[in-house]
Image: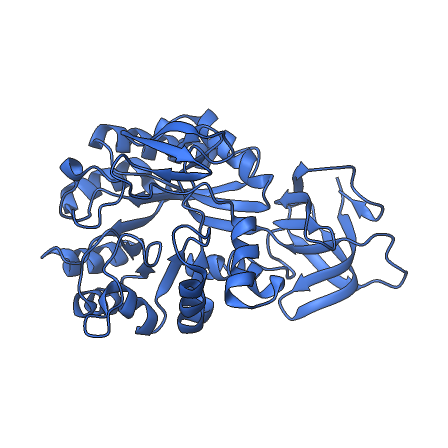
Length: 387
């Protein structure tokens, strides 16, 4: 097959912008070299690392809990059309049997591969939460972290299970965090009314960070800093955030960015209504309602989002008063680092996997490339792109 090249007007490399550059990709779908071109660029393309959505439930009428390859593939193809090159398939609290079916299918699709964005594995969001900030997770199904149950689910998922979320106020939470970390799993804190002190202790015990900051957790008060206060002050806390303008006010996004810096991770938390018309949908076993792109339960609680990560980047640039390129890193390089995958994903450098996006000067997506293969293109590729 031979090597392939991309000639672009600008390339966002690990060391900054390269003007008029050439990227060579090898037969293994990796970046072989990045050099300055010796001839004028024939197009105005911008090349950036593909986005990574570390927390997504569904899109286009499909959901991880459908437990089918077709549902995961639909999500994968939709994500590629929004500049996402990799994602974690995220569950929601349902019956043990439904959770096990979802984990089994993610494992199979993880092995088989998908047609768009790469499936990085599964992210278990629920059922180890507490009731006060349960969000769209059914209270009757919530429970304390259960080692025997987790061991069963780990056996089903095998190496495809990458992350487990839990509430740290359970009496056994700190021991569970240490045990999970010893098993090589990422641990996030979520849907919790924990105090600042409890959250800090959980992070110091090895928990990696907090899920969708501000949402589903005790908030920041000057006498009770809560989970948010711990996320903002404990070093190296990976802090997910949904920047859709509904879950978090843009001023609060700016505060989070100033406190967390490179540890602030853009997520979509998108559910099956994403990309679909307004109407009624299911999030797990719960009937929810979308109006104007906002999804809520009968009680009025937000129930996931219909955000896409490319939109989140633009929103973060506006809310945080930073450049588009800086905001993009919060959806690409920093998520890769949080997953321990920055040696192969999240940036453009030799020997890294060729997960790339091609953008116009006004940041419209032209193509998404995964492992050196075009998995989405919106138009005929401009001159100078030989893939």
